[in-house]
Length: 141
Image (cartoon, helix red, strand yellow):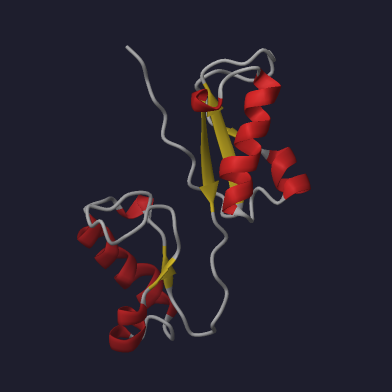
């Protein structure tokens, strides 16, 4: 049997890696580990390509393994503009139009249900709606 843990989805602005083996004993194989050094020194928690490409290459070299044995996971920072907006992010969705782990603006909810004006509408009503629409639990949004 092999358990494949789900990548952490919090906090926003973070970068995680998982490797099947590493020559450094401080790295636990097949476990998602936060790339705190990359976040602090190379903007891995802010820039997706730094997390998913630059840091992946760095971990491969540091661990002495091929790049294909390293999985990376980026948790983007939530948008703060424009004021009066509502965003959502899901780890998976049954609709192919929704890109996983990417913040998407809820323009329909803002225009039709006041999701950009009323916080509870954005964080509760629309969250429940997206969970049902995507076919996922509320905890993944």
